[in-house]
Length: 167
Image (cartoon, rainbow, N blue to C red; front, side, top):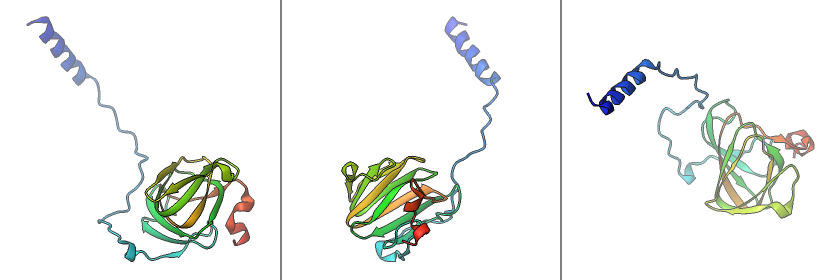
């Protein structure tokens, strides 16, 4: 046998001698989907948004349940002009797609008009878990949020929480 063949055979034996890596218990989100989901805009059933959002918007759950832990969900929100969401953060990453209108986003613990970045229809944003951000709409705006539940808003200033004041 040539030295090259000996090396290849030696490596093959070594590979088989190494025990397989045991899969760790997965922390991947659960899937609540058992069938295809296809939703046309006219099929959306708008209702009140969760109480942790300011009044005036309409929301619709497209997929999943935003309150179930470790489960994917999709929520669509129809928001009026100048709809402001105070600085807040979430326990999981938040993926936002602008369907129509303009969703202006800012980063940080304090609401700062100068730091807002206007994101028009087709824009996509990811707000990492635990990182404060805020927003305001310019014109009627529809956004879609994809995340892993539960959907929790922690306002940087607890007095900004609409649930506290029924806003």
